[in-house]
Length: 117
Image 1 (cartoon, rainbow, N blue to C red):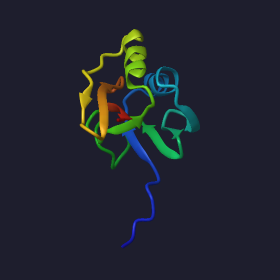
Image 2: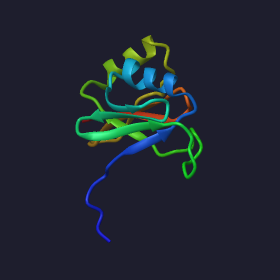
Image 3: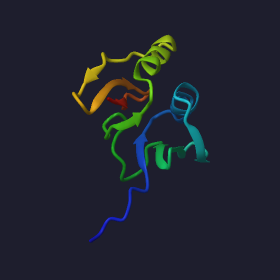
Image 4: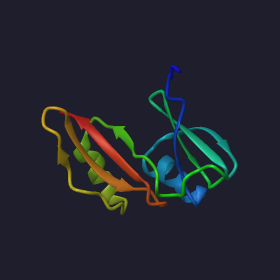
């Protein structure tokens, strides 16, 4: 078996409206495709990140993998989210690799923001 690429990374969310507002309006991601209340897909620099409401075969909301979004200015991103009322972690340094901080979307999914050193 050969995996050729990652097609999508998605979170399961209980409230599509709140999740779309967070990813589109708060984080500024562009909606690429939306299927009503079932699925919304964002294009993030060529990588597809999506949110879906619960359906058979999916994991429970808030019990998923982590999306890491790379930004140029970690401090400004953290300050912007804090100003919008989003609880964020402290910045964690990773030596020569860079630094990151974490927040959660309205469903409790972890979202991390990373900047290269």
